[in-house]
Amino acid sequence: MSFLNPVSLPVKRFSSTDADAPQINYNARTAGDVKAVLKACLVDGYGTTASAGWSIVNEVDNVCEFVSPSAAMSDYRFGIDDGSASSTIWNYHYQNTSKSINKNNVSKPMGFIDKSNAQNGWQMLVTDRGFAFIEFAYYPLVSDITARVTYFTTAKSARVDSDGDKMMFMSAGHSAPLYRVYQLFDSRNPYCALEPTGQNVQLLGATINVKGNLNAMGATVSLATGLYIASNDSRTFLGAMPGILYVTPGSESDVYGIKDVDRDGVSYTQIPLGVESSSTTDAYRYAAVLLIRTDVWGY
Image 1: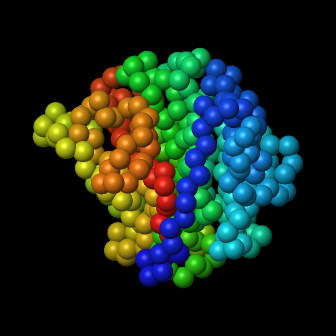
Image 2: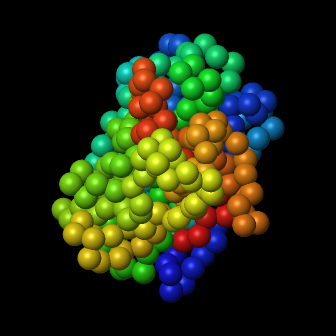
């Protein structure tokens, strides 16, 4: 569960294109639509697709908590309040104590999308210690798919877990709380931080202006790096985000669209973190790409 004692956990993948999978109607979001997807993937399964083996507790209407099957996660419960058609509120519990999360209120509507497009959908990538929930839709401005990712897992870290502070949460991309890529690395406004002890953390990486960088520097090679967790003053390395890479696209055509890719012999799904905009320039300038592993996540 750390750099000193690494563990690789297999990923189970779910998709709205699976037979009998629950669907999200982007034209008319409803209370409980996110919870229905999570419950089907984590707990109940659907059609001939088996669940990820999690369980559910404290379920009241569209509020509930999900419990990992891992003994290493026995102190944790992942919570969701999906009682609204306008937003989803995420939370977690550590040893039966509720913990707060920065930027945990995720708006359901996605701006400037084709709400009825047949390509709209979702994916979930799940391990025994966390998951990535990916909502995606057709973005007419760029004639391709845009997405947001809600990523909720324990960190890969050698730190001693104190008061549940190894949990990490990030909701990034189109119409997400973190909707412009540079905010990923802004220590003044740490969108992805979870520190119940009151000390914020931040991500380390290379802030990239996609369109400006491509035009000014003539980038033709796609570069990828892990996302690393540091103290808010950037002076202390604390760990890494499992299963995920941040990508500098080699061309504007790489900025949008969900696709499966192989990078250095490893399987990923490529997720475009678009920005809600009516300007093509801004759409590209503030977009970014994540690669999320579909085979194993390392803890």
